Image (cartoon, rainbow, N blue to C red; front, side):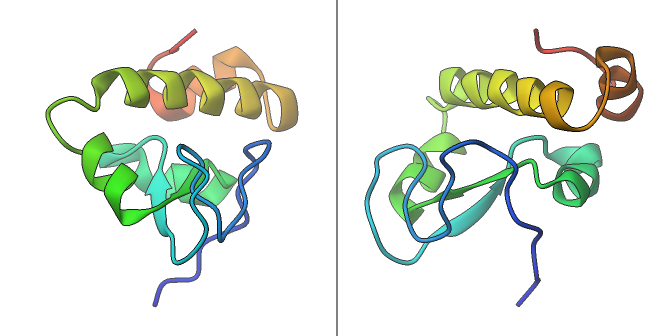
Amino acid sequence: SIKHPKSIIFDDVEEVCYLCGKYGHMEVHHIFGGSVRQISDKYGLIVHLCPTCHGKLHGKHGDNTKQMLHIIGQQAYEEQIGTREQFIEEFIRSYL
């Protein structure tokens, strides 16, 4: 299995779903996916989700939740890693 970095997202715990709070086996969700997925990994811009919430997030009604996570992820980046300009350079756009 792939070793992911520790999440930098406040309140994210490896064995608790970030969205519903369920305890157990979690899946890693990269807050920024696609072409910037590896950059998400590099900075710990990940959250742990139960399979149900992860499935819903990638389903047709997941857009609002994705948007919320993009905002939380960018805020964490700007608080802990770099400037908004640096964020845009790495992740192509601002979500704030």
